[in-house]
Length: 168
Image (tube, rainbow, N blue to C red; front, side):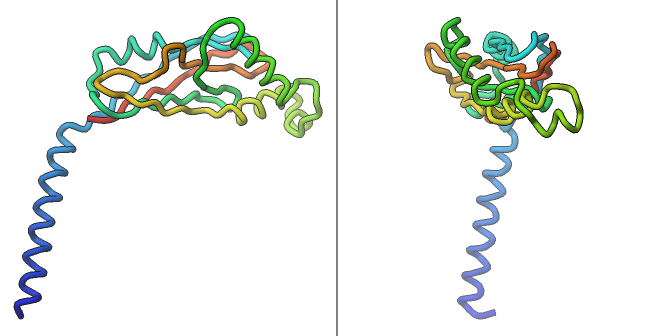
């Protein structure tokens, strides 16, 4: 082995040891915690503020810095953040209904005859998941910002919300 090859090998070994060291430190501290919330909801669009439930589950948080992922299970549910007060709630409900109004012709309804084609479109436009930062063990939200789930379906539903907290 010549000198250049020897230096390259020593460099690779040193780099490997550094990566292994940091991996061990990080993986010992990395935490993933999951929980499922269950929320009864009325005919859509119906909104429920789940911020308190999330914060209650997170306290005390095993994660100092990381992310919280919120996922609504089901194709006619969604999640967002808003200021959860009657005016904003009414405005968002009206806007959701304007985007994909019930009573229109939807191919889904022609196939399934269940009258909820608009529910699927509304939920798809809003989105089923949200990722929020966690810093110093606290969920980062604005002063008037709450996490809200929405049932878009044309019948009451019990929504399952999967929470995944990950970080160090």
